[in-house]
Image (cartoon, rainbow over all chains, first blue to last red; front, side, top):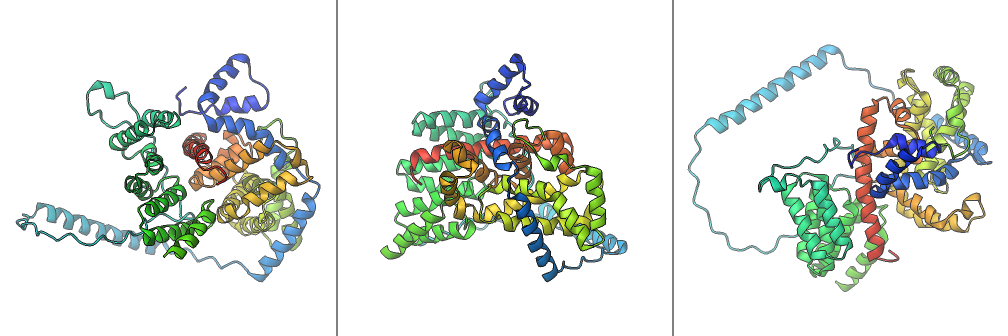
Length: 289
Length: 203
C-alpha cells in the first residue's frame, strides 16, 4: 500500500469489530503514520453519540418544518429561467470559436513578426517604498478550484541520487526537523522543497511553516515574503498566513501596513479563530498611531 | 451506514421506494404531502447538520429550516435515479458547511463550555474528545468544498465509500480520489493545528 492511500475498507471493518489479526496489524501500521485516519477511527464513537436520536428531535423537526413552510410562503421561489433555444447556443459557440481563432492568430502573428530593437534601459531613481497591498485570496465561499493533481516529482537536477526525493518526503523531513526544534535546518529544507517542487501542495504549505519559523527567529522580512507567497498560491492555511503576515509587519514597525493586514484578515475571514486577536491588535495599533 | 457502534440511524432504515413516492407526491405542492415528505427526510437532514455543525450550534435549527426549504424547492430537479436520502444529505451537508464557515469562531468556545457544563448525555464525555471533534469539524470546513462534503460523509457521518458514491452520483474511484486529496489537506491542517497550541497556549 502506498503511503498516501488510506485503507477505507479496513477502517470500516475495524468499526464493525470484524478485523482479523493480520488485517489489524496492517491497519495499525497505517494509523501510526496517518493522524487523519487515526482520528477518524478514534472519534467515530464520539460523533455517533452526538448524532444519535434525541428525545426532543421530533419536536425540533416539527418546529423547523412549520417555520420553513412560513418562510416558503413569504418568499416564493424565483421563477426558473427558460432554457435558451438550441440555435442560440450554437450561435454563441460559433462566436466564441471565431474570437478564439482570431485571438490565437494575433498572438502567433506577434511572435512571428520581427521584434523592434530593445531600448536601452532607463536608470530609475530609487522610489519610496510602495504601500503593501493586501494579497488577493479567493473568498471562502468561492467555487472550488479544480482538485490538485497528486504531487509529481520534478526532473532530477543532480543525477540519480535526487530522483527518489519527493515533495512529500521533503515536507516530512522539514516537519521532523521543526518538531526537533532545529528551525534553521527545517527552513533550509522548506526552501529546497519550494525550489524543487514549486507547484505542489507541500511547497504551498511550506511557505506558511517557514514563515512561522522565521517569525520566531525574529526575521520578519523573510517571514513576510514566505507568508505572501503562501497567500498568492492560495494555500490551505490562509487565515494563519494572514495573521502571520500582520505580525511580521508589526515586527517591522510598519504600523499602517499591519493595520491594513489585520483588517484584511477580518474582512476575508470574519469568523476566523484569529478574529479576536485581530481586533485586539487593531485596537492597540490604532491607539499607538 | 457502516458504523456498528453508533446506535440507531433512522435515516438509513427508511424505505427508498416509500421515500420516492412521498417525494413524487410532494412535487404536487399539496401542503400535507410536502409535510409528510419533509418529516420523512428530517432525520437525515438533522443528522447531517448536527454532524457538521455540532449538536449545540446556535444556528442549528435555522440551518435545518434552510435545508427543508432547499430540499423541497430542489425536488423538481431531482431525477429519481439515485438515492434520495443521499441527495438530501448532500444538500444538508453543503448548507451546514456554509453556516459553519460563517459562524465558527463566534460559537466555538461558547459551545465547548456549554458541552462541558451541561447535564446532557454529552457532559460525561471525555473533554479531549469534545475538543478533538470540534477541531476536526473546524478543519474540515476549511478543506475545498467538494472534498469537505466527502470527508463529512466519511469521517463524521460514517458513510462507506460506496454509499458516498451513491449519494453524490459519482464513481467509487472519484470518491476515493476526493478522500485521498481531502485527507491529505486535512493532514496538513492537523499538523498546523498540533503545532499552534504548543507555541501559543491559550490562543
